[in-house]
Length: 262
Image 1 (cartoon, helix red, strand yellow):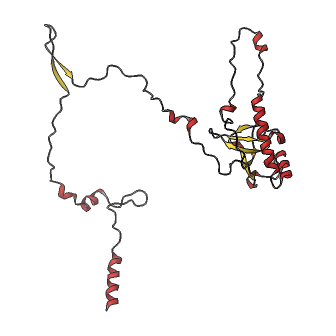
Image 2: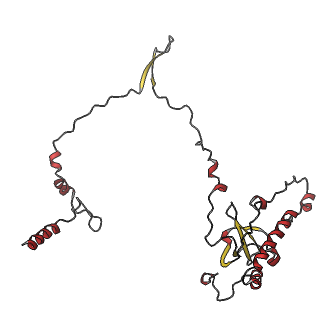
Image 3: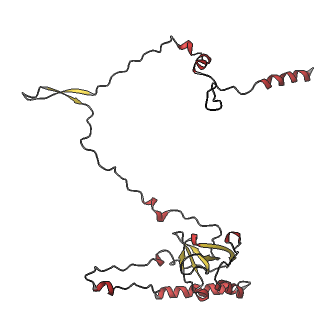
């Protein structure tokens, strides 16, 4: 008899399902039950003659009577307790943002494959198409790269990661550390103050200033190049690797970058 009782219990539990919602939409945005049907289903007729108790609210005075001296002033005057502003500002007050919200102090995120020693392909600028070695990521988020200069004439320069393709080829920098003074301030150019134009002769006399590297830059470039060339020679494919850095990157017909593995 035990199995029969179990079967009955299962049958009873099967009847119990989810409760139907009070009202639901049919196709076309039409409600299943009308207003009259819902009035009946909710038994709102029981509340028809029922009255809720009226709570009396204490009135808060807005005005008050003020006595005024003087024979011709009427003696009294009604005044608002809360006076409205006499003047309104034309512009909303803008609070100064804290220094933490400065763009220079934002967190910089670089791609995972952009690690020191990785060979990159430059996609823009005067050194477009050249292969360079990534030295480090600066505080501004820009990448510090070099050719080295002895191989492909690409000096120490900053590049945005947007204009770079990270390749699978790498150079083991090992114990070499980039000098600490090679930062964003090192690459900042100082603009000379322009004199006021006095006449027509000044228009033709003015010439564009050409950037020339100073002795400090030349010295730093030689030191970094010497360290990188040692690392490249120590590479298992040293001769071929040097030629690889010298050669320019270019796409030919029927070559698509999205199908390539760099």
